[in-house]
Amino acid sequence: MNLDLKGKTAIVCGATQGIGLASGIELALLGANVTLVARNEEKLREVVETLDDSAGQLHRYVVADFSDHEQVKEAIGNYLRLCPEVHILVNNTGGPSGGPIAEAEADQFLKTFQMHVINNQFLVQSVLPSMKKEGYGRIVNIISTSVKQPIIGLGVSNTIRGAVASWAKTLSLEIAQFGITVNNVLPGYTETARLYSVLEMRAEAQNQSPKEVAREMAASIPTRRFAKAEETAAAVAFLCSPAAGSINGVNLPVDGGRTESM
Image 1 (spheres, rainbow, N blue to C red):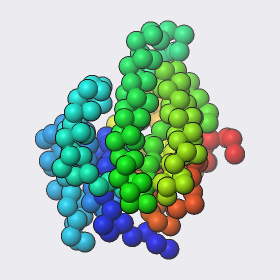
Image 2: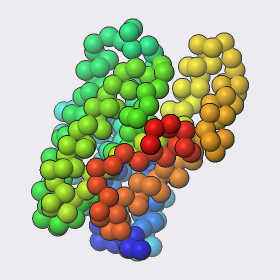
Image 3: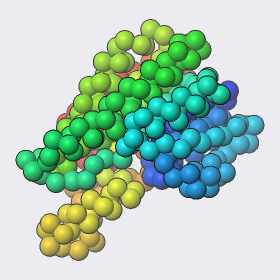
Image 4: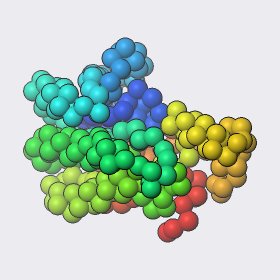
């Protein structure tokens, strides 16, 4: 099985924690040059030094806040002028705060759409010329199992995550002819900061302790446990590899089997 990413360059967004960071680590272990993107420069400096460089890789970072589209455009534009060759793009952005969809304000939808769909579109348009030239491209979007099964209490997130999945499927049909695949990884309950914020929100709403809520949530998963970030990252890394060249346009849940649809 060809998992070798030596000589390939990857941009990984939301890369200082959770699944984004774990994805950067896995891609580096497969030999890729990894560029981490996030808003916290101090944290970026710390984590970029931890990436494996045993294959002679050169790892970098870009400071960009995905809530500010103009800043993202400037930061990524500056990076690509210096490092134009990109083979892999991992789109990963934190979701909005929870709450019933009936209570959500229009601005919440607009802001989240900008952060996810518009930023993803800009990033893809920025790296496509390089991927087409190289005849190799892997675009992986880290979304959520809510694409298949909406999650109660995450109305805005469910809506926009679904839009990202539809955007990605359409894109996958258009650019596969150039050797570029587009796939979505759908994490379920995963041990990240995002999960713990959801636990706190549900605990307050249900007048329970976070530990009680966590126990109930884990019981709803066939594996009876939350996924680890590195398990989800392993799926991301595989989809970025040469071995996954004919996997295109799929939504891949990494959720211990919790999603009930096929």
